[in-house]
Length: 68
Image (cartoon, rainbow, N blue to C red; front, top):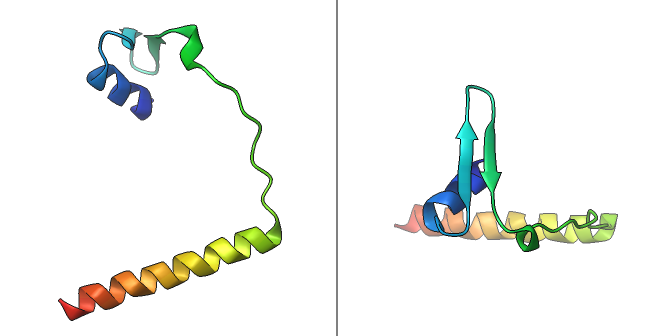
């Protein structure tokens, strides 16, 4: 819902919140903006490679912050 709330705020001509109550919200937007995709299949090897890349990136960031 947060993404839809952001879209309503940023593009009021395209996305509209029709109604809201305590537990739900109803939105209106063009049917062409809806897409369905199957989940991405990620191999164990790809997952481990991405994990290592993020570990390295986080170390870079923490080193940069400690230098400043």
